Amino acid sequence: MSTIIIDTYLCNGCATCVAMCPDVFRLDQTTEKAELIQPEPELTDDVYQAAAFCPEKCIEIREE
Image (cartoon, rainbow, N blue to C red; front, side):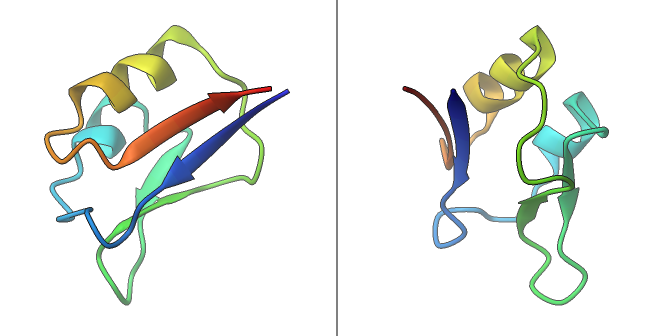
């Protein structure tokens, strides 16, 4: 099982992840930081690319 962790302290709300993978990520309306739309989304290549291209490197995918 894999888990996606978003470090909201590091997130600057640039929405790169949202642009790359809008079915998985969105910006929180209050904090304007990245969050998951669903708790355990399917890990597609788009999700891995969104994590890799995050300018703040605040998205981590932990594989267990």
